[in-house]
Length: 213
Image 1 (tube, one colour):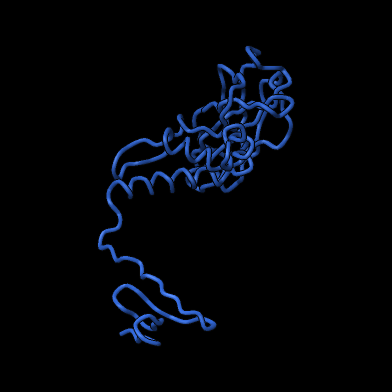
Image 2: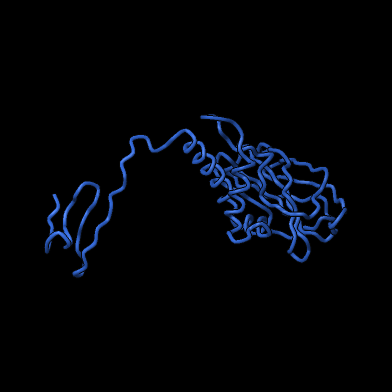
């Protein structure tokens, strides 16, 4: 029940319907209560929220990488939001309860720098060796920086190389956390121009199981 103060034009305290009246420092104010909806989640809303949750979990494991990879597509938003928008639209597969990340179509970087043609993956003794064909075409240079990233779906974690690599080197390796042994990881390769201004679309290299031997 609400109590009217100072006549019909005065403030009131308490609850009337879905409106609550109160006073703070002599100021009367009212606010509406949130509407009660028995089924606030339509199938379409559930699907969209599931997509968002999946993509966000993937991208937040590699935030520093995304800041570089999507900086040229950020515009008036953050690089992370640009990456979320792109991958929600292009990196999901399945319908209903079977929605999942479509790893070959996800991008961890987006740009116009030439990438590469062939790549390779190998795992030995907790170390992943990754290779690429050092093709120089279009706007590419032998001095372009190479970044390799692995995402572990089971752990929700990412690892990428921190040492400087150039396109001309054609091969390198990354040490893998011991806790990843037995897991399968998804792998991506990105090229960044020498001046840091341009990036390539990331190239999906496939997945590989992490083994001890």
